Amino acid sequence: ENAHYLELRRCVLISLTLLYVCASVGLPYLHRQEASCSRGFFWETHMEFLGLFAVTKCAELWLMVQDSAVSWDQIGVLDVLLKFLPSFMGYLDGYTDATAVFIAASCDDPLAQTLANAMGIAYLVGVCFFQWTVMFILSSQDPSQACLLKLLHMDMLASCVTLPAEKKWVWDLLAAVRTIGEDVPQAVLPTIY
Image (cartoon, rainbow, N blue to C red; front, side, top):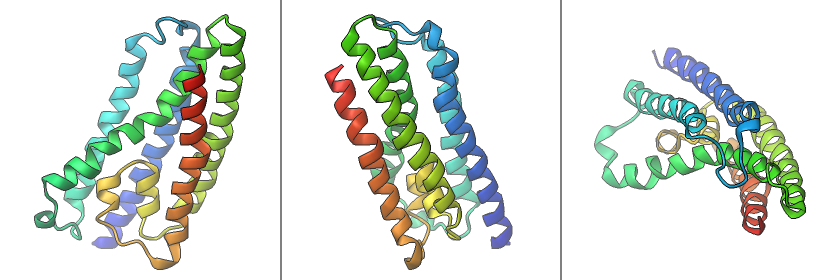
């Protein structure tokens, strides 16, 4: 029974991760002509991403309910406040970083154009390549799926899974890749913008 659940969870996680990557990159790219230096993107574009966000977070809760190893009597309000709700911001980060590239590119200012190029390169290398390609491959090899859960920002469910000691390096590398490859450049460059 547990093997069936783990296979189902793996399929759900891989599918949602691929949808997340496609939406985070694809929506801003498809709507790039609508981006404005002063207005950003139309709210309807963000609603498309919000739909996937809602599906992913509902899937996290559903997977927790289906997991016989999750002890609900040990999950309290504090867990929801410190793990589930903050994971919303992490999930949005990949999408908002992509929108920032296209918004900066829509500006006529030469500095904005330079920053858009730098943000785009940082996004492609730090997020698309290292996080969503390299880390996805490494996380997919974790039998506990904790690293894959963390990659998809399912932090509350990830905290309920026992990470094998031999895969701790993948978890730590994911944190380093996110910090160095995404958070630092995508904080500094838009701040300059």
